[in-house]
Length: 185
Image (spheres, rainbow, N blue to C red):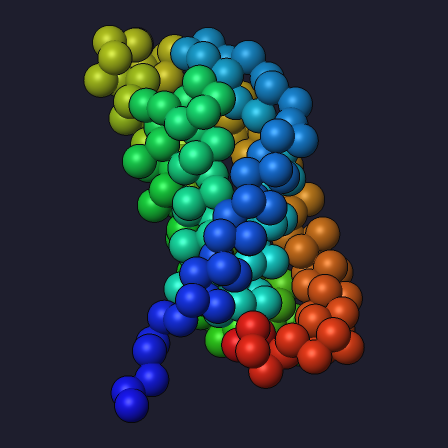
């Protein structure tokens, strides 16, 4: 019998981590901007941890799906398709760089930085283009993304630190629970 590449256990892992990403997004502080609002939240931490612990595909799917559903159900529906792709990138990049396996702290830090800051660049670029397409002046678009850049870089940096420190602890807990061979890497 041929082994499945994406098992039911993989689906459960992605679903559980997507729910954690969704819940982490609800822990937020909304900040007004000239063209809407942005927020500081813990979802980036959950997206990074998903990739670090469960690899690029499962981690990326968890981050993208959890954030997509948050946007759909909480007034950000027009951003949901972008969020799906951009948050997928966080988990995918973090998982790809580490291979979803334990690495030296420097590799984990690099993986988190690449995932987090790639998201920030994608998010700011999308919003700048959106602001211009909605008829905003270039100055207004720059003011909008300036607030969002400060928020996103702060949020991303916090996520890098927290995920880098938390991932080894969570990995050890999974290993003690006998889950490492089934779930991790």
